[in-house]
Image 1 (cartoon, rainbow, N blue to C red):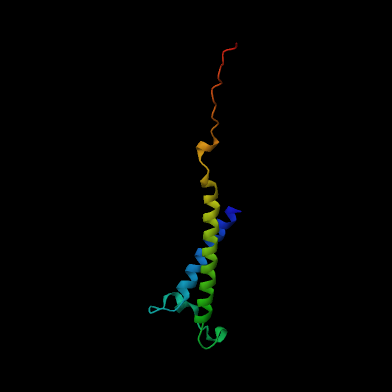
Image 2: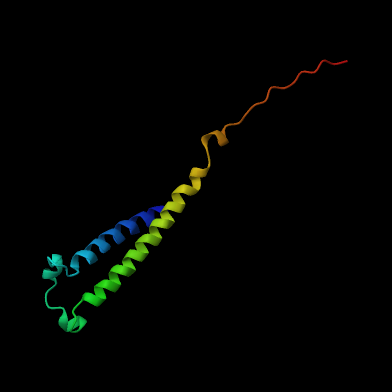
Length: 96
């Protein structure tokens, strides 16, 4: 389960990076390569859609990060010392 969550974390990181880079900024970023999106996304272009998609992917990224943190730290509360068996010396009491 943790392996799957790690793979999903990498996918979310890549998608989030792409979504952020596709948004228009003062230097346009990678939004220049998206072409004419006004016909698909309306008059405003992809700005509203990309903002919502970025928020959704970011939220899923954070939820997955919290899950991974909990999963990795669940076993960290146990110490190696807890697994060591302590042998107590038997007390030899003199017989009467």
